[in-house]
Image 1 (tube, rainbow, N blue to C red):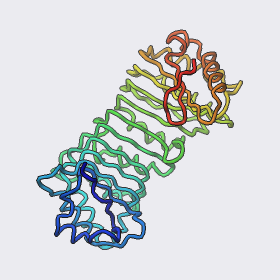
Image 2 (cartoon, rainbow, N blue to C red; image 1 turned 45 degrees about the vertical axis):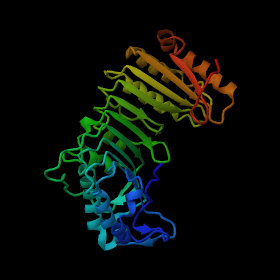
Image 3 (cartoon, rainbow, N blue to C red; image 1 turned 45 degrees about the horizontal axis):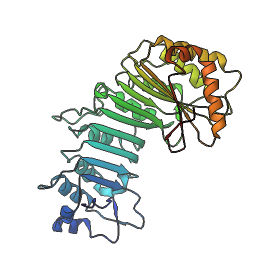
Image 4 (spheres, rainbow, N blue to C red; image 1 turned 90 degrees about the vertical axis):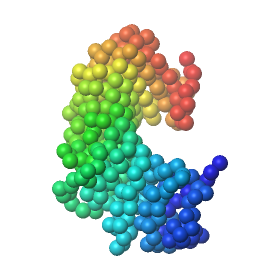
Length: 350
């Protein structure tokens, strides 16, 4: 089995040859370079100004499987000092990138747009934690480049993500959101922030995909419903918390599912960190009506055990059936009711 190539970054492992030596010796020829990892947090590393040259060589290899996946983690473009522009140009020189993973990176608005739009074969994008070190400006795609047809998009959002959403939904954004078929939205280390500003900017993002996964949303206020007219497969998570904030999520999902859509398969995951409130019945009734109005082909309900004992999860299952009587009747014992352990594996508790 061919070993993967070393992690590289602005700071190089002291035990490795310099990036210039790697280029001269073609150090990568005995490695699998189809995936490369650019890390900004290489411990005890030494700054190496030859990173841009190494990237250009890796982009231009012949006789090997080309680089198809790139992951950039913990890198601030400013770490490249005077080599910032050259580094960014080198990043854009890879002709065969299909998957791009950005995690905790800092760059300018224009650098993110030009990076995402430079890979004409790009199909999968995951963005978790982007900080911009400039103010929004007028930015444009690279002239003469084909727009990427991104089919899979994962966004990890926090309270500062509105700038990212503005950029992705702009008319001259890095790629067309209409090509996105599979969308996953989650929080960045925490639940998705349930704020009006963030959700207003989410509306264009969720308008086209046919498969959408929403992780837990932290809602503390009334939010306008979002329209997902083309979604056929939807997954969302409700977390039963002791403060009863989950009631806001139930109300929001009831309103959102009440809009016309192409929904066919629905999966609801319940994280039972607390018991259900006796005062939440009216909100479940609204969700119950919305579930039946959609005339689903399949309804899956999964209850995550977490730290709960098995008996309490069984009780949650019974309580859900009593709160969703129409869906229980229409889909047969609340569709396919299942329990998950902490690893997400299915358990049979019926």
